[in-house]
Image (cartoon, rainbow, N blue to C red; front, side):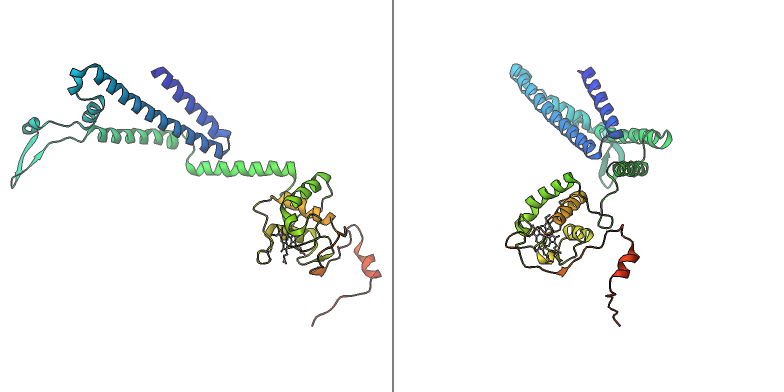
Length: 294
Ligand code: HEC
């Protein structure tokens, strides 16, 4: 019994050290929660078993029933109660106006607790401050921050930088557009119609946009929403990549002319000329339409 308990404790200690080193914190927390639950259940079961044993014992030895139970003995021992007839011996010899004092010691459970905290304190001090076997909270925090930085860096090298409103670009990747279409059909079509022609929300297939028709504008509208007008903010439910995908899917709907579309809303948006074209030649050919506001 003792051996199994020892092996179990060692196994749990080993596991928790191994988990603390490389598992993610949610798993580690879950592990400790489950371990605590198991310990509580074990304690409960042992208490019930002890109680049952006690009852059985009493049933088998009816004459011994007058003896105090195991629990009672434990209770008396841990409190070190003195019987009344010992009072004479315990009386101290001072007497204040008839008030006498008994020389009762602190109960063993109390002193036991004190010694345990002292031992714990010494072990903690040696392991955490002298040999530095285990990290202090500040160090733990630093290693966690460092490992997160490493993780996000490895994610970036794998998937490219995190997509934001500032760096989002149009993608024509079929997989991304298929993902965008799926999101659009499940989350957006109730208000914008499956073909994008618009119902509660505006028509997304024309060249008129309330909040701008550039991919960056569309990304912004989807992420932040227009709460006052009934357009949901999606950044809590869709990750940046999904928002980029659905924005690019919307752009593919441009000019699809669905039947019975909602009337254009907002301003006409003309896409900027592709970046490859030199600026000078196009601006020289076009008449100057700049309006100077004084
Ligand atoms: C509950 C209805 C509703 C849902 C669901 C909804 N929208 Fe909207 N959406 C609107 C409304 C209403 C507007 C107009 C906001 C305004 O008038 O400023 C809008 C505006 C937009 C605009 C800006 C259009 C413009 O002219 O500038 C885009 C882009 C857009 N929605 C995309 C989406 C996407 C993508 C989804 C799904 C992830 C979605 N919407 C889900 C109601 C909705």
